[in-house]
Image (cartoon, rainbow, N blue to C red; front, side):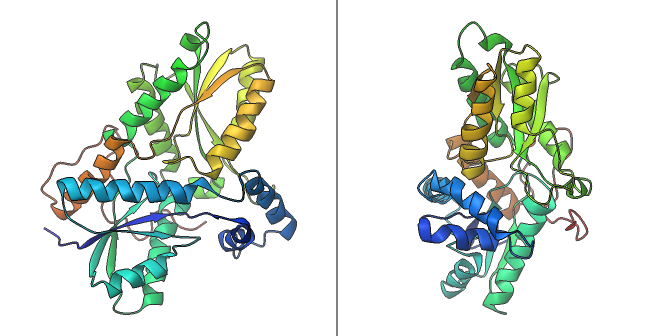
Amino acid sequence: MTDYDALLVVSFGGPEGPDDVMPFLEIVTRGRNVPRERLAQVAAQYEQFGCISPINAQTRALVAALRDELDAHGPHLPVYWGNRNWHPFLADTIREMRDAGVRRALAFVTSAYSSYSSCRQYLDDIEAARREVGDDAPIVDKIRQFYDHPGFVEPMARNVIAARDSLPADVRDDARLVFSAHSVPVAMAATSPYVAQLLEASRLVAARAGHDPDALDLVWQSRSGPPQVPWLEPDVGDHLERLARDGVRAAVVVPIGFVSDHMEVVYDLDTVALARARDAGLAVARAATVGTDPQFVAMVRELVLERIDPSLPRRALGSLGIRPDVCPGDCCPKP
């Protein structure tokens, strides 16, 4: 048994007003030599949404739901929230935890998969925040990946069914399932199980939605960086247009790589990719993310309990094996 005295929700963060957008983008791209003109182009995307990313509001909702879940069912832990890239910053939250007497906390990261950017970088940021706070900062242990946990897979399957049912009756039964996740550089993908885990999650969701798990597409979105650096392809918008050219009449786009409808979902998918699909003549619907689905919230509690008591059974639906509590130091290295 391990004694924990807090749960820390760790998310990406996002701007919440006009004055936040450029400072936020500068933090996200720090050290990457991104031209100012490119940042201005991305800032214009946020302007379409009032310069507010949905991610912070959705993380607040998740934190509130987790507090209610733990208050109702235990363990009775305070729930804190810290972001990598915007307020509340991780270091500020860890300092608040220290001042409240927290000595050891579990971190739930709002990313289900293993790669440098979706796991290792969060671990690095947590440790950097602890160093900033000082020697008396609480220890923070990250909860394992949950891409194949029923608490993630089953709500996503229900969302796929709801999206498919929203399509016109004459095409919904033939709709192609198109699963989308954030693209990463090919070099980063090659040193992690990111692609394998996404494919496994997609197949599990498809099967539980009553779809042939061998008849789906895994595509990519939101690539950034210099064009000469190869990233995972195909792009979701290109793929949807190709389906239309090939005679496919309908598709359900499933944001399998995300747990909430943040900017990469509402802009890159809803605003850009789905518009390209409809312009190409494809009937298309987008499945919701899990957000604060009660089963997903209960999953987080289950992951907390299994970490407190290692004798408890650990659930996973896939065939890749449950990820370890503590990743090896050389896994998912920075490319």
